[in-house]
Amino acid sequence: MLVLGIESTCDETGAAIVKDGHLILSNVVFSQSMLHKRFGGVYPEWASRKHVDNMIPIIDEAFKTASISPEKIDLIAVAKGPGLIGPLLIGLNTAKALSFSWEKPMIGINHVEAHLYAAMMPHSNQLLFPSLGVVISGGHTFMVLIKNIGNYELIGQTRDDAIGEAFDKVAHILGLPYPGGPEIEKLARKGNQRKFFFKPGRVKNAPFDFSFSGLKTNVMYSVKGKNSKRTDPIIISNEEKKDIAAAFQETALSDIVDKILLAIKKYAPKAVYLGGGVANNRRLQDLLQKKLENHPFFLPPKDLTLDNAAMIAGLAYPVYLKNKKADSLSLEPMTRIPLTSAPLT
Ligand code: KG4
Ligand code: ZN
Image 1 (cartoon, rainbow, N blue to C red):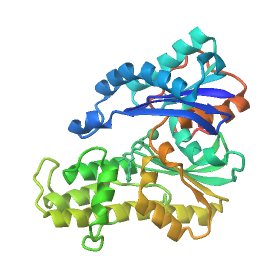
Image 2 (image 1 turned 30 degrees about the vertical axis):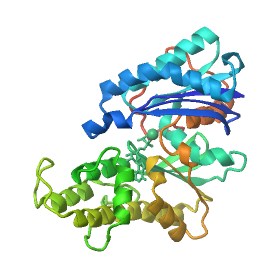
Image 3 (image 1 turned 90 degrees about the vertical axis):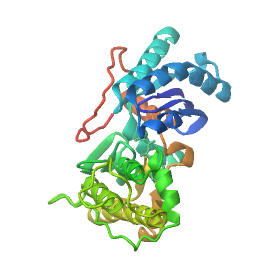
Image 4 (image 1 turned 60 degrees about the vertical axis):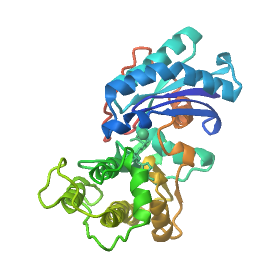
């Protein structure tokens, strides 16, 4: 089964062609992050306009790279949410137009569920259930118990900022460009994490929930002074910036790993599947290796960690086989998809 995937939930325009849920024939992504750098975050209206410019050329390129013609496609899969309304509409309307004119079925896919599937994709014939799913991206931070693809139980989520968002905001405080995650990681490598002490957020009576907003504020007070505001000037040296990046990164990532360990203890999952941009972080990968010891964990291949359409096309395969039906062309974008609903899709 050949699936064309389309991704446009935020600032990446993506098109991919994937066979049988795992064989990637093409995976084309145009990241707008360079364009949004000057705003210190994603500027939604501009993101929408760039999706309009790039969507069709990127779909063309996905077909060219895969050496496939549109008639060969069995299904069109599009990220229906969660995401920004303008960008979502571009992807969804493109998918609907292609579905109508090519007379191919179309389904909408949950973008965050696809982030989890990205870690499963290379092993889709030998998945381990029940497992723990952990999404750590710019827009989401949560843990689910995965009973099967499409059958999830939410066990914890962030009460405020997503972890990637915290990396981006702390980078901004330190005067680093967007997206901040890779910048913090780079700076942290040269710093001493013991020079500053930050505490991870705790949520009363919810041991698996996350909170990164207090941590971010503490970093700001260390960088700009007690009770400072975002617009206040930086009062620390460049050397101290490195130490703060290292201490923040260690606190945020250890919090993720500690909560994974706690969930392993309580739920005894057969494996852990992680997804989302923060899974790119090498320090996180080292911590997982060290602390999870022999417990199996799976990260997505590098080109599937950030937003991409291959994970959308990949997840569409098991979802379509299970549901045995396409979505109607009146499918609406969903800026939010409540995490409590199981299945997610
Ligand atoms: O999954 P993703 O592309 O977007 C969402 O769906 O939200 O993740 C983007 C996020 C950004 O916040 C970025 O700063 C973060 O992932 N990120 C990282 C790293 N690479 C990307 N955070 C920490 N360390 C990294 N190496
Ligand atoms: Zn994403």
